Length: 432
Image 1 (cartoon, rainbow, N blue to C red):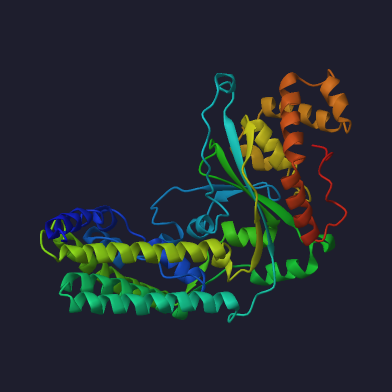
Image 2 (tube, rainbow, N blue to C red; image 1 turned 180 degrees about the horizontal axis):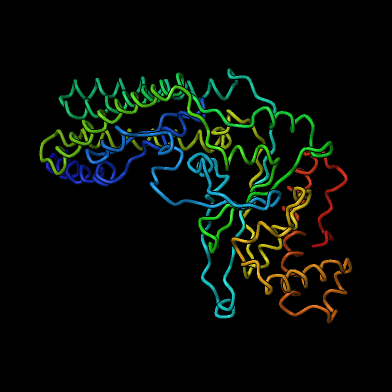
């Protein structure tokens, strides 16, 4: 015979689980970024509380693009232009895994404590022709979204039939927010800058004069994780230097405010069910299960279409595995030797490095020694030569080893081929 007292205690226990979701967590900004950036995204289940209403009500495009960070942020250095500037569009780039990729660090051995580990996250990006807006992937995402709404509505009706009134309303909150997110996808969008220049470079290719660039993105100049984005200069500046334009912002603002009202109702109902000893506590369980299933569906589509946030700027993106260096100087030299990059007229080759290392006599002497070592095309001569220090030899060894990795060589070869530089793909003996 079923132990109803045990079931009641289980329901009461599970009713505590959503506390962190409605009291501390808010996924509204992620939902906005995906809804505005792609028509493939599945509505993300939203959580929040009364304390979030103020920032929701007064949301601005800058809030969305900066992930609600009032000040500060990441920095960008351009190899071609030799300058640095604050990163814009961080919310889009992080969720597209162009920036913000971080791996688990291994504990350092005592021998490694002399110099820290610097990790490079290299991404190659090239513009491609736009796909049809009614592709297979579009219809797949629409079918999943429609199925979610239908199933949640049916579950809400079932809860109402069985007397779980609060659970029924909670599921309706998920339904309403999903529909509002779909409205955002349909009525609004984002627009990237430099679209004419990007299309011109795609047609022209680097072989005919389109400029390639490397943007180095860091949280601060002393960061141990460094994002390295390689592509056409026009496209990189559209991504990192010029804020995207949100079309029909008034629609975004009012739909977001409606979502905020629904979130307050949802949070209030969840709070009222906290620790409830009545059968209504099962409404919280129904909501939590539905929330997790919706979250899984959105993650599935994001995993299947990792580049969907750049649907307004169609791109082929290659994300390499993290590359580790012992010491920051080796990482900087590796970045400086990315193939196909040339500085603009009047821009020094090492100007981009000013944020990382002061432009003083010490840096000039070190770079002079690195240049001298790099002119030796015979690797064995570098190893046995006495013209460079042991520190420089160790840097050369790391850089050569990283450049000779098969995965890096293959990705670089594919990128250079896509950029039209068929005969410039050998990076094994590129001088510094």
